[in-house]
Length: 329
Image (cartoon, rainbow, N blue to C red; front, side):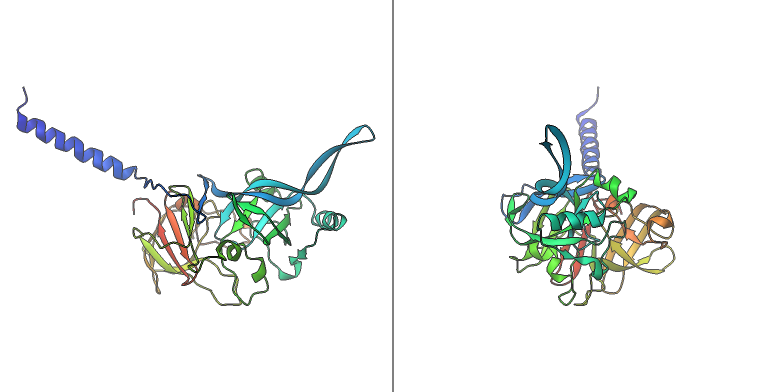
């Protein structure tokens, strides 16, 4: 029979392994109180979305005409899920129509809009320059917003974007627009934060929450200065890092709108912050995507697949990001 000393040792060993397993399967469950600063997120391994109700888009409408049922396109209110994208700047609803047909439809139903064609704004993945209007009584996770800038973006037969449209209704851009830029009034981020003096967003993917106006969590492993933040710029959520293997410097884009991390080579990449940035970023399995998908440029991106198990905090007042990937570094 085992003596009491042996039993105690075995119990301690079991407790030790339980602690290790809990750390490996760490999930920081936080009970958030109900308030207007906290939004429910719908988090999946392919993207995170926020729900919007009462948004007006150009949709199919069926009715009976002369005893026959017919479909037509018209502006209709509906609800949808919009992909949170730190790599873009506008709220857009993706429409599977030719751009000229969208314009003609808006004119037919006397819907006022601003054509952003001259701005040159377009998504890297595709789409067309949005047709922006301002909409009232939108409920973003059941929180009411008026005078919300909404871009109607025709996909115009672009197959990659049409496949994305099967999963989400559009894109919710979380990058800042400089005060002197001609697209400033179309910023969905400004509308989201207009009543907050502390212009911050916490994307807590672990607990499926977006929190506005709060302080950064203390358990971050990377803190970085956002680059290219002049008042006449569309800001890009890039930070300066150095490759720990070869000491080569990079500006890496933190982009929740891109599924996979990308780099100059595939596999695991360890990056260290430089130039007023500090800490570690880890690309667990960077991809080399076909160049035709990225305008023939080898993109340097921290993608959603390396973000959604942790959290990302963005301080727009000071142009700083805090990051906890919740992975083994």
